[in-house]
Image 1 (cartoon, rainbow, N blue to C red):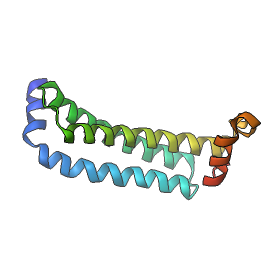
Image 2 (image 1 turned 90 degrees about the vertical axis):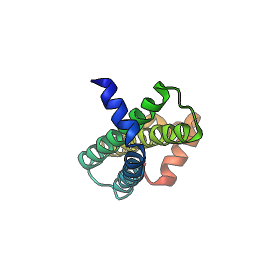
Image 3 (image 1 turned 120 degrees about the horizontal axis):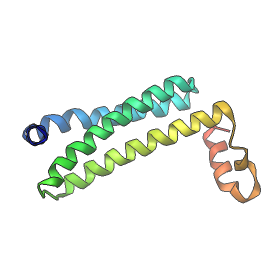
Image 4 (image 1 turned 60 degrees about the horizontal axis):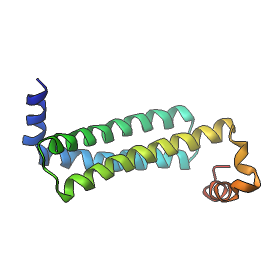
Length: 125
């Protein structure tokens, strides 16, 4: 059954990529905007989970190509895009959680001045 799923993924590669790439970018941007406009953490968490699901689907699609030995520039670019979207969503979720609950007071210490400055500059602290 897994072979037929992989074959479907490779057969419809253009269509899958034409849908998943813009959806990943738009969903990740929406997560970032929810954090920027200081929406509740429940909304940010739901959008981050949805966006990470899209990115995971893109990574799994790329893995179907890597399994059969197709190693080209688009496979690396799409894999990096998926990883970037997942990490961005995770960072947005952490920043939203930190803004809501303020548990990361250690960021205000002198040895972590750069991180605290960045978070103040972004408007999260």
